[in-house]
Image 1 (cartoon, rainbow, N blue to C red):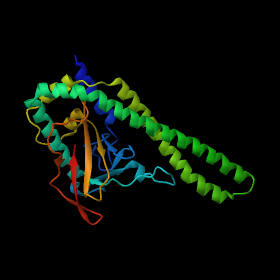
Image 2 (image 1 turned 45 degrees about the horizontal axis):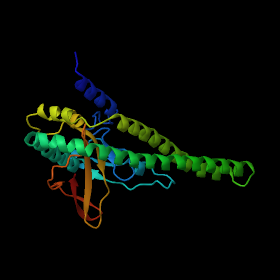
Image 3 (image 1 turned 90 degrees about the vertical axis):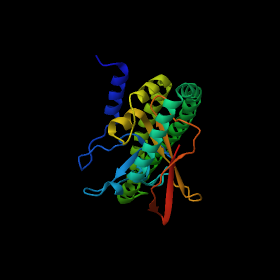
Image 4 (image 1 turned 30 degrees about the vertical axis):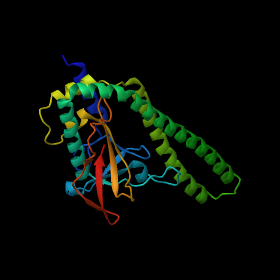
Length: 270
């Protein structure tokens, strides 16, 4: 018989497992990366035969950009930098839980309810905005159709204008479905700190990231855009069952640097 925890973790892997890329490899962070500003999924950017150190991720909203007011920025981040950050933060969290188990349980239970409510508020606000924009697009579609029917707009102009709106509507529809699912999951999910502690106990030490340990420990990762004033990028890691884990330490920093818009960028995880 399979216990409930093992079954749920297996279901999570299935749900986040995307189709293999052109190089027949399921990405390490498949289904876990989201833009920290617009909420859209992050997508892998790589070419067949390229070295992994050149692989990266960008915001899905930026990739699907069209004429819309929800256009986001690239949020480009190297996979090598993200792997280094996630491994270091995972080691920080698991070490803290093992050394301060009771303190962790008390703190996590206290913070969980506040974090869930904050996330729900943000997601509902984004959902309302997306639904309102869908309504605006429907009005624009009807106006363009009427202008085309009355001869005020040529067929070429009609096709050009509606193509951009149609792509935006498809993107919004996908995002609305994602948000609705996330809100449903958040309202049903409560912090299960003891399950996270049990998960930590199963591992003696984590020396490298694998698809299995990443998807067991991590619920989602938010990638924020580069802060040009401080030349840093914030990465938020939310762990399974407990969300973000604050151990009181300084943020986990990446010791790797990469060139972006002519500047060395330092990334850190919280």
